[in-house]
Image (cartoon, rainbow over all chains, first blue to last red; front, side, top):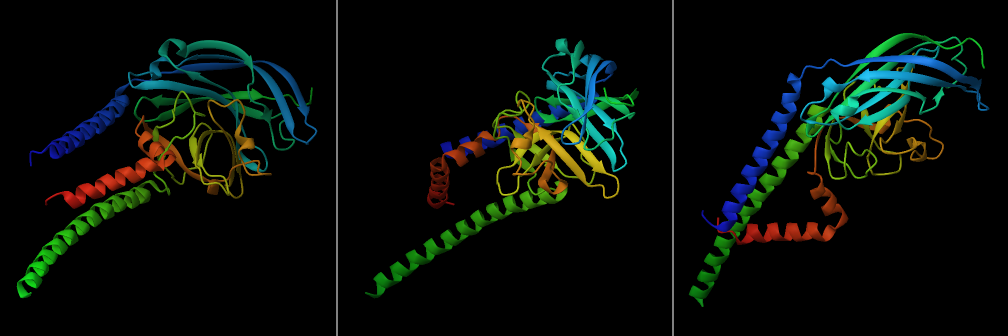
Amino acid sequence: MHSFGYRANALLTFALTILAFMCAIASFSDNFSNQTPSAQIQILNINWFQEEPHGNDEVSLTLNITADLQSLFTWNTKQVFAFVAAEYKTSKNSLNQVSLWDAIIPEKEHAKFWIQISNKYPFIDKGHNLRGKDFNLTLHWHVMPKTGKMLADKIVMSGYRLPDAYR
Amino acid sequence: MGWIGETMDSIKSIKIRQLLTQAVTLGMIVTSALIIWKGLMCVTGTESPVVVVLSGSMEPGFQRGDILFLTMTKEPIRTGEIVVFKIDGRDIPIVHRAIEVHERKTTGAVDVLTKGDNNEVDDIGLYADGQMWLHRHHIMGRAVAFLPYVGWVTIIMTEKPIIKYILIGALGLLVITSKD
């Protein structure tokens, strides 16, 4: 009952249980953080808008993204993954979401930012549906914790529209 | 000769009973682990409720050796979700993020394109020849929670199977030589 083996076993089990419990509590404490992120996206310019040789529409935009995601960071946050997606409907598809830009924000200090870039990933539609299309730009974020439950949410900004003709 | 036979019998019978008890205890441990695993599969709705991150394609968020808890609900797949999928014909589950989703109006079927956070390009190169999109049946689950470092045990046991055999051998020895 008091051999080394039994003691080591008991110690190890206890340590693992306490560790698991602490991870769960750390994750649970994330529920109490007050989160008030804000963002704004402006389309500065439609660089070009054309039909690809395969027959799909492609558009290139320059976006101006301003965001303040500092309130999403808690002591249990490892990084926040933010990305901007364009969402639109077509006749065949009830929803299309295309990711245009993403970034990894490793620390709270970098979470308040303003950048102006052209889309990192190509905005291609499967078909010819983009002319004159109304679409939403949504800023999504995904909070990845040091341990525990991940959480994701978004801000939807609507009212953007693509031109009616190719350029 | 009679008492030798008697002693031999009594020795054999003690050993057998002990051995059987130990075998049953071991069996109980293994089956309760199996029950917990299958129960988790039911609760989370996916074939593998826990996966180990094997590559560095999602760094710095997920490092090699972290474990992810998955669920699979009927809710539609949307961009930003971290999905775990298997390519037809390959065994290894891949953990990447969905960056493009097209949902068909009539059937609700989705075409999904994925990319690892740390990769330069999307996953088209990883899919099977001629496959441009992932469909719902490729996707095993969505990651909802994670624990760092715990998966290293599995990685070590898979990459150096010698350690697996040593561990099982040592456990077996412990079981056999323990007095109760």
